[in-house]
Image (cartoon, rainbow, N blue to C red; front, side, top):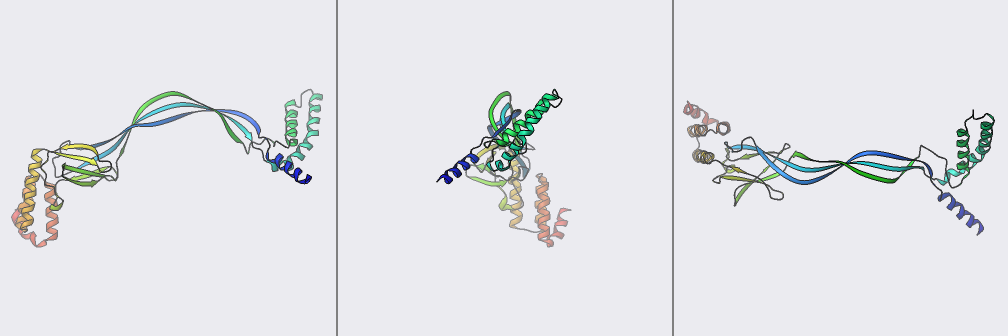
Length: 293
């Protein structure tokens, strides 16, 4: 029983030691906090009013941010953490250093301080720390920092705007309340709005004076794009010309459709139709070239 008690006492002694305080340190560093005040989605185009069968839009996410700058003052204590197993050699080292400490004090006194008393004091402290079973030697190689106090002083505040492209996001293009189609932005936040194409199934029979653009996620409206009556009329004529060609296709009919698209200032669409149809139907080429001369 006595042995058990002694073992328990020794174990408690080795586990319940004190950390060796080295010094207190103070650090001052700037620190910023950023709070998002609001988020907007801005849609921009090259022209405010489209005048072509296709046009590109760019969508950006705009964040209004409140930035607050603080000066942070942190006071911490540096300790050498206690590790009981180190006492197995530190106690013996402390006992051996004790006579050295006494001799160094005598030598400092006899030499009238030529051998500094501060050195003698350091040797004595090291000896006493070693003999103390509840404390380890000081060590800068295994320092532990314990925060004591943190003071934050506000020194500045300002607002900033952060813009980034809204990449890989689906947009809803809605010309009327009962019809819509989807487009997707690329890496740069750009999306192509196709009002009319050589594929009649992908063309839109538009009559609305506005195109409303929404984010599909959250149904957030970005912008309402005005459509001129002139563009709507040109699109309707071009669509009729395409439908007329596809109803009775041929080389001469292709030439007629291409000329009509060019007259309506849809040169890019006319070129796409010509390239696509002549590649698909090479037998149209001779009649097409005669008709366009």
